[in-house]
Length: 194
Image (cartoon, rainbow, N blue to C red; front, side):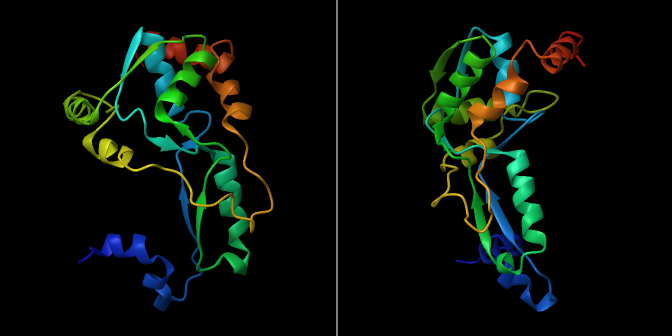
């Protein structure tokens, strides 16, 4: 099987650029969450607008990792020769299905909604149809294909990073709840169509 240059970089990582005398550490995080993210925040907006949410690939599994934990792992690796040439999977402490994550967001923002899990072909059709929507795409067929593979880690948090990642439940409510000034600001922007 032949791989493109981009695929070789992804598959072989540091071996691919070893001749360039660079210290490289690769990271493969699960879905990253945090204030202003395009994952949980997107579902928060959708749940505020719709009484029912048809959800593509509802059974896909994630281990969401907080953006500050990812940034700290990046920073910690810069001056640590033990990380050079290594690849690290970064995941939060808990695993959820996409449906569980969306239901959790609904509970946090006080908008529990009915979630309709879509099957394989309906999920594909939803992604295909959303590609024709003008403006920012909520979902594409590339997103659908990505959802066909669970986005979780094979092991726990890498011990070379001397801290434990924060849980979703400890961070997400702070920026998702409707009673925060930031959330009210986002509502004003949404209502003004900005």
